Length: 216
Ligand code: ADP
Image (cartoon, rainbow, N blue to C red):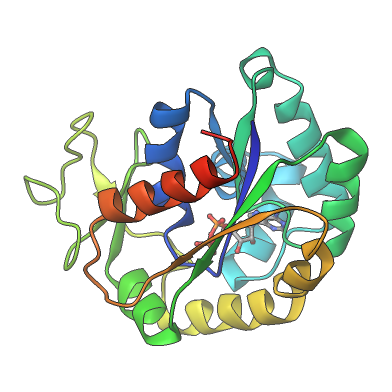
């Protein structure tokens, strides 16, 4: 099964994708994570990528498409994948459809105030990328990942100014994808109406929706 999980920054894409991958037995692929690991290296590419990411802008399509198609060609994707953070532009969606068929889009609908609250208190594991929130999804031990004991950190783009820019970029460049995919690919919608919905509840709803489409 090939899935796209689509929603604004902070809507829970990464949190749900990482839980869905173990339930569905297919890998979650987050372009944001791929770029964060590229940025750690000292290369011409990494400097370029960092420039965009730190401002909350999109990395150019050409780079993203190349990185993504290379990742999807790997062996672990042969039974399917969950895309988190890709596509983000119509151009990227077109490149994806040249490459493979998508079975469903999981659409996350979250009010803006929840997004801002969540992103400003989000923490990520340096080691495994697991997502926490110091207010709404706390680790058992402060600053330490429950899963791998790695250290938690705050992303450089989770600052109020960059968060606002990422939301603007989402509205301008990614939201049009909803129209683009309408009628082409079935949607499973999850509406988040309160800030402390446990991830397990959201994931159960999403799985129910996939089942209705005979996909899980
Ligand atoms: P979020 O969804 O929380 O904003 P991500 O981790 O998905 O964060 O992405 C972080 C940053 O990585 C983006 O702001 C952008 O600069 C870059 N990025 C990730 N995926 C893409 C993509 N598909 N196209 C362009 N840029 C991307």
